[in-house]
Length: 208
Image (cartoon, rainbow, N blue to C red; front, side, top):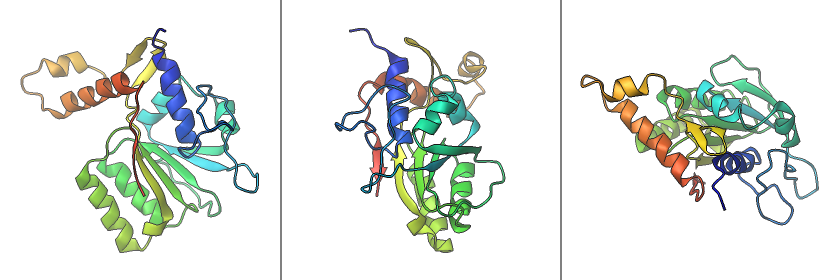
């Protein structure tokens, strides 16, 4: 059976949109972007807000339509760098790159009690220094209990076709061959390539 990278990534994103639970009644995960959203024990659909940065928005755009988001209970979606109003009774699903700026914004959102709970999903592994930074800020503001789960999703690539993906990194070839360039871009390219190769056998790590 031929590898369908686009379908595999869609399946992983669908699971993430459903708070990292299987959306299908039988316990398996559907690869369809329109699979049914999970419900509570009382049979009520779980509604949520989606918060993304620009890079993660580019990951979702080729795979998930606005109507698909709604079918997974996503009622609103915002950029993490935009000013947002409080919606205190609804959980927020974050899908962002693991950067100091995003970590600080998440901590600020939690301290302001913008949402009922925060489900954090990083596009690649959250480095230990950034995890400690997030934990420290949450403890300082007394908002640690607002973070429900933290997941490393390993989705840092953009599926353009069934067997074609992009790392969405302009001028990568130039930077790789520039002796004066640092190693940060090379590491990011390696993370994206590894994520695409491992999409068929994901190992998302979570922190309770």
